[in-house]
Amino acid sequence: MLSPRWTGAIAALIAIALLLVAGSQHSLAACPAAFAPAQQSCRAVTYKDLPAETGTLLKSSGCDVAADSNYDYGVSVALGGEAAAYQFCCHAAPHGPCASAIIGKDKGQWRLLAEDILGYDADPPCSELVVLEHRSGGFHDICIPNMASAIHSFDGSRYRAK
Image 1 (spheres, rainbow, N blue to C red):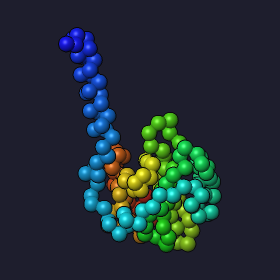
Image 2 (image 1 turned 90 degrees about the vertical axis):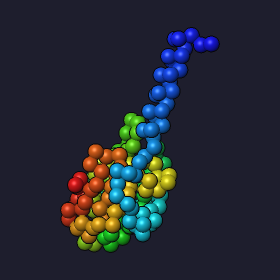
Image 3 (image 1 turned 45 degrees about the horizontal axis):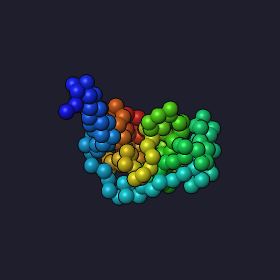
């Protein structure tokens, strides 16, 4: 038989474990249904997979990007526009998701379409970036389930929270 002290400690550990498990279960319930053709286009990428122009754009925008870093990951996904778009880690975080940027080709130019989007390890790809069917400004709306304002629409210059 365990002492009341150990019983309380074990109960507290179980409660913490349950909270951690619940917090780690990313629920897409906060997002509308994904647009299957776009969602299925999603692929994991690293810095070396990015087109040269996008790497240069990320660096000139103040992103801390480097090949083979701990945050050398992102995804390639069909958001609309003229080519695949990229969500890529921009700034490493002390813990948790990185602050990522979304880069896409618009009107013939690679542009920063969004900044400070939560970026997660791309395993599986786009598990935390849900592409929606509705389009705004030529790009599909997106949903990031773990952000306070989950749905973002492109307003012609940037993705903004709805």
